[in-house]
Each structure stands twice: as C-alpha cells, then as structure tokens.
Length: 91
Image (cartoon, rainbow, N blue to C red; front, side, top):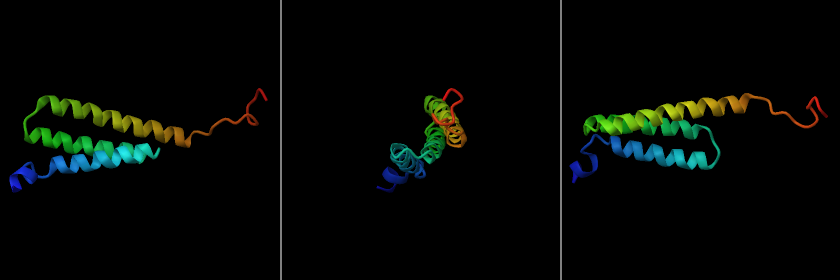
C-alpha cells in the first residue's frame, strides 16, 4: 500500500496539490497562481525523471517556462499605471 501512494517519493502528490492550488488561485485572479503552477511543473519534472519519461520532462519544462513568463507579465501589468479617461491626453 505504501508503494502505491508514496512509491515515487510523493513527487506526484506534491505536484497535484500545487496544481490544485494554482487553479484555485488563478480562478481568484491572483497572480501567485503562476508560482504554484511553476512549483507543480517542477515537481512533475522531478517525477518524470524518476519514472524516466522524456516527454513528461520536456512538456513540464515548457509549462514551467510559460508559468514564469506569465507571472512576470502579470507583475508588469500590476505595476503599470492604467490610463483613465481623465488622464488621457485626448480628453
């Protein structure tokens, strides 16, 4: 029973939990959801190394990069001042 649940060092469990948190946080429009997605991808990469799945490693490396990119873009949007009609030069 132990091997069934923790036979892969719990990497799959950690990845799944971080992914669930990521989905929830992104659904709440919180940018830290991208960090949780990146952590999930990192754990999936480690899991795929353990089970020797090249496709899983490559796919999750791409998702990891996309999550980091999305977090950075969300950070820029959060710090960029938005233009209001009153501050617009055409107003």
